Length: 225
Image (cartoon, rainbow, N blue to C red; front, side):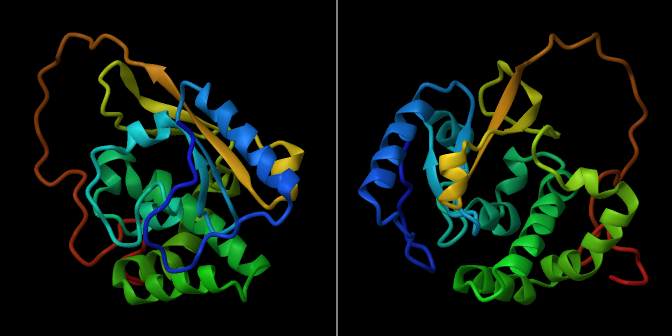
């Protein structure tokens, strides 16, 4: 069922003052309930306002975390939860860096927001994440282009706990005007059915491939790390 996620968080979640806006969100929650794919509504801090059962199912295996649960703040989950990479495959390049780019844009627009400043402080206290934000992000954008930052339409790797779903999803942004006027954004992860695996081919393994050296972010040039 779509919900207004609870649990401890650094800042209390704002609730619309208007009764009409609250009623709209209640009806919108019913709409999310009818969606098969994981769907979430977030505010400018990426605090989760609404999410459906499919979203909760996607992240059901992640362990507890005091401030970075996916149903509380999705940005914090991507950046700080140690289990994020178990669901969001190619976590660094496909999820972390695009989210950092959106975070940087949010800081430019809402620089004095206490919630965003709290995330900024946590980034600064994490050596790897600080390197990603200050060095890796500009380098990555120069390399791949700004189109890679956009969520809407992006096809990104995903590891769903249900084996019937494949290894990628397409992110679809579908924010109606009323939600937009409230400062909210809706994203849906359109899942793809898994394909039958092709016959396995023997391949020579390459030791260490895909691993990240401790204390170094792969997108940061070695001279800047």
